Amino acid sequence: MVTTFSPIAAGWRAAVGWYPEATYGTAVPSVQYHWVGAVQSMKATIDKQPILVYRMDGSTDFPAYLLKGVRNVDFSITYWPQDIALLLDDINNIGLSTVSHTFIIEDFDTTNTYTITGAVANTVTITGKTANALEVTITYWCQNIIWGTGVAGLPVGVTFSADPLNTPFFFSQESVQIPSGTPQVQALTFTGTITNNLYRVPQFGTDVIRSVPTLTRKAEGTLTATFASINDVPNERNVPYEYTAVRTTPYLDPEQLLTPPTPSGLSQQTIRLILGLQGAGANYPPTPAVGTVFYLDYAGAVLPKIDLTVPISDLVAVELPWTATNATVASHAPPAP
Image 1: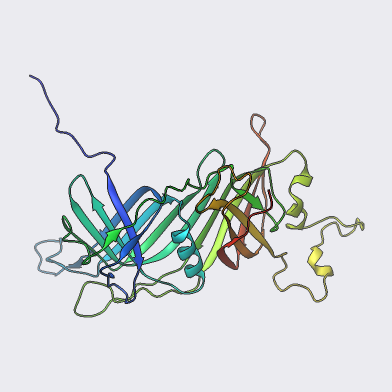
Image 2: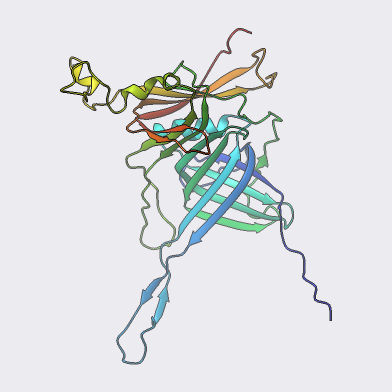
C-alpha cells in the first residue's frame, strides 16, 4: 500500500498595502495603498476571549455556557524597508501622535483578501546586524479583520502600490554612532524597540473594541560591539563610574562634579543609526553619495550598564543596553563624494 499526502501551502504569494485612517477602524476607499517593503513574514491572531460561565448544579465542574467576549486582534509584520515611508510613519508617529492604519493583503494562491482595520502600532523593533539587511518588526493592535474572496474584502476602488525597486537597506550601508556623529565601527548588532503601551477600550453592544489609546511610551535597545582596546568604546567610562586620583574614594560618579548636577545621574546622548541611501538614483554601496541619506535618532539616550563577555574561545565583546527619551526618523543631504 502506498500512502500519499496532499500538497500543503508553503511560501504563499500575496500583495500587501497600508494606508492611514481618517476615522479609527474605517478603511479609506478609492485610493492607492502604500508599499510596505520587502515583507518577510506576517502573522494575524484573533483572540475571541470567551466568557466562561460556571454554575453550581452538583453535576459538573465544566462551564455551562461559553459566551462571546471582546475580541483582541493582533497583527505582526516583519519587513526589510525599501521605501522609507512606513518606517518614517511608524517611528515618528509613535513618538508624537498615534495614527491608525488599514492593511490589505491579497493572497494570489487562494484569491482571498484580508482587510485589517484600526491597526495601531504597539511595538516597533529595528534590528541591524552585520551580514543581514536592516529588519523592522511591527506588532499592531487592531480592531477587526475582514476577509473575502477576490476583492470582496477590499475597500471599494483601492489599488496596490507597485514595488519601487529600491534595494533594501543592508549592513554595509548602515553605521552606528554613539554619540551622534561618532561612528562605532566595531558594532556588530543594533536593536532598538519603541513600545507604545497601548490600551484596548471595549464598548457595550459589540465584541469589537471601540478604540486603542496610547499611554506612556518608552524606547530602549542594545548595542553589541567588539573592540581592540577599551578606547574603541569612548562612552564606556561614563557608565557607571570612573576612577579618581584619590585612593580613598575610588568610585565617583563624574556627573557629581557638574553644576548643577544632572537629575538622572547618567550622561544623556543621541544614538544614531545611519540607515543608508533611498530614492531614485541611489547607489549601493553609497559611493559616490546620491539620493537621500536617512538616519534613526534615539535622543536623550543613557547607557545604564555594561555587559562585558570575555570567553576563552570567542570574541571579547561588550553589550550596551540603553534607554532613550525620544526616537525620530529623518533625512539629510548626502555627504560630498
